[in-house]
Image (tube, rainbow, N blue to C red):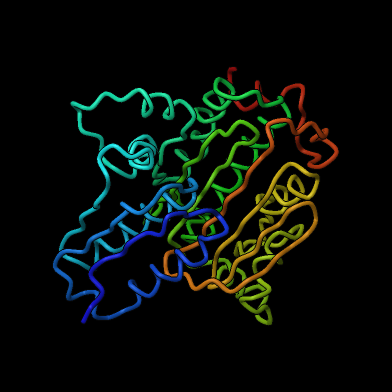
Amino acid sequence: MPIDNYVTPKTLSNDSIKSLLQNLTEILDDPETKKVDVFTIDIRPLEWASPAALLVLEAFKDVLAHKVGSIITRYKTNSNITKLGRAIGLIKKPATIVDYYEENISKYTIKIEKVWNRTAGRDLPKSFTPHIHERTKCTDRALIAIDWSLGEIIDNAGAHGYQAYEKDDYPKPVYVCGFSYKDRVEIAVLDCGIGIHKSLKAKYPALTAKKSLEFSTQNKVTGHPTGSAGFGLHGTRLIADHGAGELYIWSSDHGIKIKERSVAAFNSPNAIGTLIVFSIKSGFDVPLGSIIKSIDEETYFEDMGIFI
C-alpha cells in the first residue's frame, strides 16, 4: 500500500527537522507514491513550528506535486499554528477572514518567497532587512549580519545547488522565509538542488558526504568550476562562531549545527534538497569588520541600497 498521508507531530522545532526530513524522504523515495491519487498533509496536531519546518513542508508539497494526483492540507480553522501558516504563506488565506492574531503575527513573519533567478535573490534582502528593522530592536550590526548572510546564502543556493554558475534563471526555486522573535531573527533558505557533497565532489573527490557540510564552511572552499571561492557559509559560520547565534545545515543525507565554535554532526536522510537556517541575536554587537574584512559598517546600508 502506498503512503497517502503525512501527519505532523505536536512540535516541529529546528532540532526535530531531522525526523521531519526522514519521514518526508521515505514518502518521496517510495515508488508506490506515484500511485497515490490524493495525498493528505495533516497539520491538525501541530501546536508549534519553526519557520524552517514550515518551509520544508512547502518545498515538500511542490516536490510531491510531481508525483501524486493532488494534495490536500488539513488544519484546524482557528488554531494559532494555522494563523501562522497563513501569515507565512503555507496555507492559503480566505479573503473573507480577518483575524487580529494573524494580522499581528504577520508583522513579525517573513513570508515564504520563491526565488527563481539570481537577480531576484540579490534584491530580496533589500525588502527583508527594513521589515526586520521595523519590527525588532536589532542592533545595526545584527541587521548587517542578517542582510549579508541572507544575500550570500540565497546566491550560493541558486548557483551551487542548481549549478547555475553562468545563468540568471534557476530550474527550480530557492525557498526563503523567516521570523522575528523578541531576542533573535531566524532565516531559513532551501534549494532542491544537487546537495553540498555532490557540488564539492568534483573538486574534492576524496571528500565524504559526512564531512562535506563542515568542510563547506571553511575559507575558500567552493564547487564553482572556475574556482570562484564565494564566502557565504564560511562568513555566516564566522558570525555564528562569534556568538551571534546558530547555523544549521541539512544536505546530502547529513546535518550539522554550529554554535560558538562547537559543531554537532548527525545523519539526516533528505530527498528534498539543502536547507540552511541561521539565527542572529538581536543584541549582537561584535564589530563585523573584524570578522569579515569586506564589510564596511559605516557605509553598508547605503552601499547595498537599503533604507531604514
